[in-house]
Image (cartoon, one colour):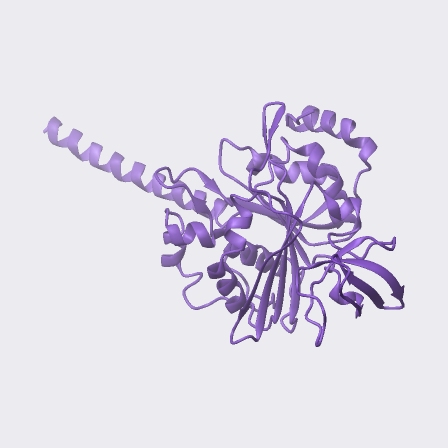
Length: 364
């Protein structure tokens, strides 16, 4: 009799424990997973059937070569959509051209995936009204190894990295590369028309009957109103062209991919100040543990004066490592637009404040 009673009690306790664990699991899923997008708010992103289905979201939590390649493109779409849910339209549904800057890039990560035609196709098919997508990759500065910096061995020269036509020539994707920390701060924006004559610029648009090819470096030797007199570097060709064909616009959207803000705080600071002052909608992407960006990035950005518009959330489209699915890039993100940026002179005080109030250790 006692044995049977003990067996019944064990079964009851097991049922109670399982129920508690199920509740805890459900709470964790609610905590970590953002709600489905509210499609009543136009974002310019048109998801395809099945993109956000539970079955597809489950597949994205596991390694796949296709997902590995497509993660950065889908992460961009997810971030733009999330800004729309926060009431900020970064891509107007009727827009036909759009410029996005990726900051802090490398030749082995962002350049490799963003120059991929598969990624171009998936972006254009979900931003169907675009006829010109400009992607500007800024960075190629190498990675920190202790106090040393290991250079990016395949960093490209400044200029056009890819120019492809899609949809029977109706849509164009241009990918531009710019080496350096924050050329947007040091020279206004990458590839703008120099103030001094004789400076270099890049041809970025197609001019009927023009003498230059897209991506070609030219010398600016004269100006008149909105026109520039451009000369080829060999000196054999010159032509008056409008300035819009010799510059890349300010970004409509910016993305800091796997930024590691605490480790690269000094490098990011001036650029983030520029993004805040220019009110550029910016998504900051983080990676999985042991990186502490999930706990730290929003606190660091707030301390820098960024106005956070998109609360930190798990990314639906992570880049999952083969053989260890707990290790992920593009694992989560938050977003800001505008704010009251702190001056560079406040960097030391900010580091001390973050350490004292949040126990965040910033690299000096």
